[in-house]
Image 1 (cartoon, protein in one colour):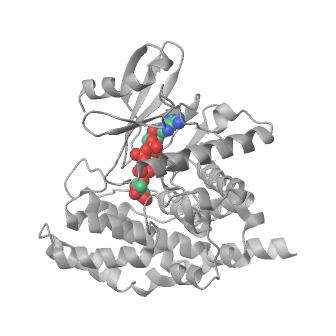
Image 2 (cartoon, helix red, strand yellow):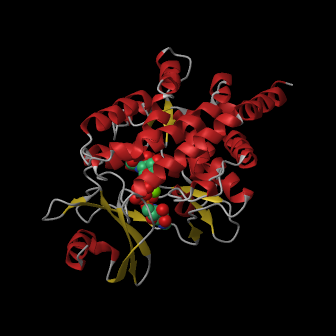
Length: 367
Ligand code: ADP
Ligand code: GN1
Ligand code: MG
């Protein structure tokens, strides 16, 4: 992206003082992120992906409301709110974001200092911290008034609808890629009914809608650089009403394995049951007290369906021409999809043990 566009965006925040430098930052799939350094402080500047997020006012209102709420909660707990809660840095005119000449939308966030963002857990503790951070996030937002939230991406984790979109992409075959992915298509068709499982439980009132994060991967949590304890949950674009087990599930999808999300060699992809159990411990340590038995018993479903759904989204995007997820090489979305499907297969192979981890927690709790 040209330097001039970023410089123009920065003009909306003269109050931060003279900017010494700005550099591309992080490795998210959706927004463009920059670390901005002034003489005094650092900030996060993001170009919001408006193809993904159409209602930027609603999106920024959500983030502002949620970060303010979490800030209050953190202060109530007597903790350092500048480190444990992110905040929206308003533009000089008080707006939550700015729009440049070309129609790009930009926001600024406080930079969480002395933190690290990992792309891969280095050990069990890292993953525990991630799961616990999202469990805590869930717990803290129990009393957040959900009616204040806009649905930033409608039907985000409606897996049934994601399946329909996948079949549509197959039918359209825009890139003439369907012939290359027959096995993957078959894999998904065999699991069509699974896609409705959690959606149906929610619709029939057996699972409650909560305020959830919806994108709970390890690189959306910052850890304290000294203690390596979970510090702050970031990337709040998808905070919306959702299912607790799905928040748990996306942490498992990304973390309970030994591979990259876009691994090319499927023989290197392993779902790790021990790490799954670490996620259960971490998440339930924080969110356990507020979750129902049914929510706890459906944690394995959250793990399997978030992985299946994510793979299905990668495959759909591959068939459509890679417009949604950023790619740095051709077929990257196909590799991402295949990796998710391999993980799903392995989860299915140790399903009873996964269910057992929830039962064990409930048995101990009910004793
Ligand atoms: P995306 O939606 O593209 O994933 P994120 O909001 O997750 O965008 O930001 C991308 C990366 O920028 C993160 O993975 C993290 O490394 C860094 N980052 C984002 N917000 C902050 C923050 N407030 N403080 C420090 N680093 C941040
Ligand atoms: C995207 O924005 P980022 O990189 O944290 C995506 C998630 C996917 C994830 C897969 C808004 O997350 O839903 O699970 O990629 N976010 C959006 O890595 O679609
Ligand atoms: Mg992110």
